[in-house]
Image (tube, rainbow, N blue to C red; front, side, top):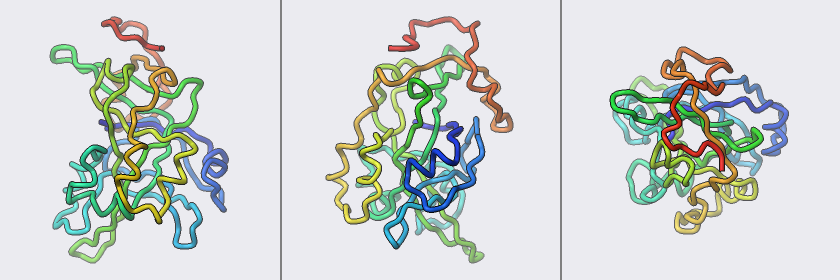
Length: 233
C-alpha cells in the first residue's frame, strides 16, 4: 500500500516534467498523510496538463459521508475496474501524483520500523492516481484522489507486499489520455517498478506522527538491525 509519502521536487522541475503553462506553488513535504491536500496533475478540458490540489482519500460521487474517503487512500490495480468506488474514475478521471519517495513499516513483533523508499539518485516518482468530485449535503464540492497499488517488487517486499504503481515518464501521457477509456488497455502500466532502480533505508520513528514534517524524517538511522533486508540492489 502507500500510506505516507514525500514531495521535495522543485516547482520548476514539476512544470517541466508535465509541460505546465504556469509555474505551480509546491512546497517541500516530508510526511504527506491521508486526508491532506496533495498536488496532482490532470488534463484540462483544453487538453493541457494542469496542477490541482485534491484531498487524499477518494470520496465516490454517490457516497453519503465524507469519511468514506479515509478508507480509500489506495486502490488495488488488479480490481480497480470492477470496484464500484473506482470503475468510473479509472475510465474517465485519472491523474498523476508526483512524489519523491514513500514510507513503509516493517513489523517486528509489536514494533513497526519505518523505512523510506525512493528512486536511485533521488529521481522523482510519479504515482498513478484516480480522482472524483463529491458534493456534500451542505453543498460543498470536494475533489479527492486515490493512489493505485500493485504487487511489491523484490526490494519493497522486504517490508510490505504492496507498493504504489510508479509510472515511467513515457507513460504519463497514456495515463492521462481521456480518449483511453478501456481499463484493459491500461493494465500494462500496473507492473511493479524495477527493484534495481530503487533503494531503501531505515528512518526515524518520528515519521509515525503526521505532525512531524521535516527533512530529518528521511535521513538514514544506523541503529536498526539489518533483518536480512537488501537496502540496495
